[in-house]
Structure formats: C-alpha cells, structure tokens
Image 1 (cartoon, rainbow, N blue to C red):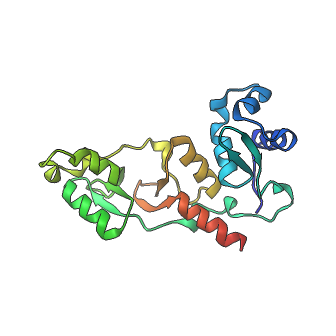
Image 2: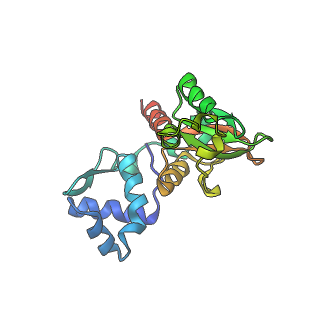
Length: 204
C-alpha cells in the first residue's frame, strides 16, 4: 500500500532504518523536538505497520516499510468508504434506554443527538457503568448525564481521507469518531477496526 507520509514521518522511518532498535526519546532527540510532538506520528506508523514497536527495546522497521515502491492504498480513500452504521439515541432518553440500546445493537458507542437530530456527544459502556454503579436511581436519569462531549475537531467529514481519520483518532485518544454532515447530523461512525478491515481488504 502507498502510505502518504509527512516529511517528519519520513525522517522518523529513515532514522529507524539506520539505527534500529531506537527509542522514541532517541528519535525525538535526533530530530530536535519533544517526544510528545512525535507521539502521534509513531502511533500512526506502527498502526500502518511501517514500524514495529517492542516495549523497553525500541522501534524497528515493519512489513510496510518500503512505502515508496508500493501501490496506492486506502489511506487516501475517503472516510465514506469505511463508514459503519451509527447507533443513535436522543439526549432526552434515559440511561436505562441507553443500556438496552447498547445490548440490542451490540454497539460499543452511542452517538447522542439533540431534538434537531444534530450530534452533541457520545456515550460508551464505560460511561454508563461509572454512572450506574452504586446508584439505583441512575437508570431514570437522562442519558446526557453520562455523555462525553467531544471537541469539534474530533468529528470527521465523509470526504476526509482515512489517513486523516487515523491521525484525528490518535490525536484525541479515540477508538472511533463520528462522521458528520455540514449540518452536524450523524452520517456514520468510523472506528480503528473498520479502518484496519478496509486496509486488509485493499491489500488482498
């Protein structure tokens, strides 16, 4: 697959090729920047198998390290090509209804929408568990009480590239992200699992 890397990501790969195993701190030092600055770059490169990471040892080149000679990949495809059906719930509904929805839909995340069907946040099983443990009245509370607010920059557009989606999820520590229309209605949901599945399908 052809991996469109930034100049800094190419520099990281080149360092790893020359000096593997090399730690993230050593890479950052040689590039003259902080480890925090390249954290998302390293995560992306590992996820795309350009690099491999071994705890307490460092980084090595991965299966896709010859990215210059490979064919175009799904990282250039649009998010709409890996969309999953979103699980939606109105913010006025109860925590009990959210729990039931999670089980019936076999979902990991629920997108919460307002009365105008616009996206306002997400709820996960972990959010619901935190609220309901030791609180017998929690089931009757509005699901908005358990909702996590996502920053606007964490949402994606159907026309964004899959590569951009991965970078956004890594930057915000997310396993998935909502895909919104211009009017902030939920067009779908994209997850790391869906992206990896699409990558595998493309490579076959």
